Amino acid sequence: MPNFTVRVMLSPGLILQRYRTATEQASGLPQVYDEVDGTFLVWQQQDVVAGSRYEYEIEALVESTKWDVTLDSRARVVTHKVDQGPAMVEESLSLLVKAKGSYLQFLPALYDQDELMGRFLMLFE
Image 1 (cartoon, rainbow, N blue to C red):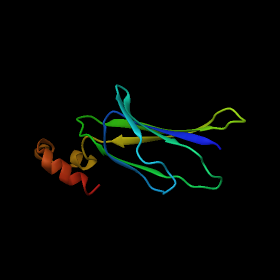
Image 2 (image 1 turned 90 degrees about the horizontal axis):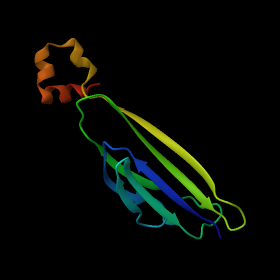
Image 3 (image 1 turned 30 degrees about the horizontal axis):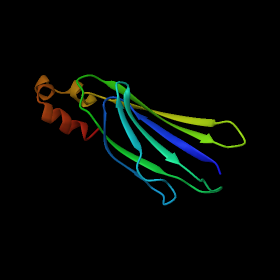
Image 4 (image 1 turned 180 degrees about the vertical axis):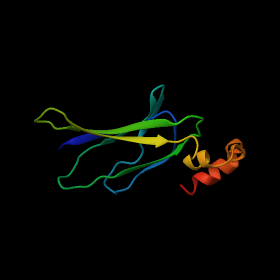
């Protein structure tokens, strides 16, 4: 029977909070690796049944930043079949994190100096 590996990379700047499998067929806990270029989660799934659906969920917190940054993450699934070689599919996500809200450019500098007020204004954007 075929099996597969799911590998998810969280960019530095994303803090891993929780992860889980969202379907009963999916295997439970992943292996978690913290490396210089990000946090990696790897799930190994054995004995895959044709037509089955597997879902994995990851929740991460975005670190605050003083500059605008783009956080890139990606997920890769590699299938392993006995009679064929491995097959791979990959998806990526880019998340733009703004350090300050764009409304601040239209307000007096006093609002820019107060971090709490700046974050409060970002809620309305």
